[in-house]
Image (cartoon, rainbow, N blue to C red; front, side):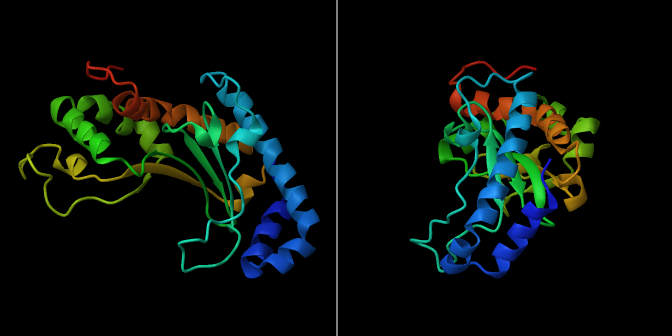
Length: 226
């Protein structure tokens, strides 16, 4: 479980986002990072029961806390959160995996279509046009919607080229992003059963990740089948 001290560190970091403060509080950061590593290790262990994770270690999953500020107007050197990508290869997989975000008041588990290439977006729309049930049977299932009620992402204002306005699944066809998330309270994040709860969410959203990975990365000719 994560401790309250880890959340307190992130709160203080948000208020003192500079290199001098971070250097003075390096020990707090290291303690919080170890706290996160224990959580991710527990989640990896649980996810490995239904997802193959060859050669995937905790260090492969956790994102650096340092921000890339080269092209950003915000020159704050550190992220105000901890995060990890849970899946084969961790954050370097290049595929759709489970994303865990730890931030006081804003923690969540999520996954989905976030930054598709034009080729991927075309494949997504083709699949929705040809066989919408392949996706809808996943994301419209009651258990899925109960756990992942929040949808992030942008949609087109108009119908995409080649698709009529009265298409029965025009709302999905307009999607440029389709990312589902489940938020956790600070009390949940610091509870003894939090890792188990995250694993539950990963299991529920796994079919959606498989749908996207099949379309985008597996280069199959056949339509996705459950």
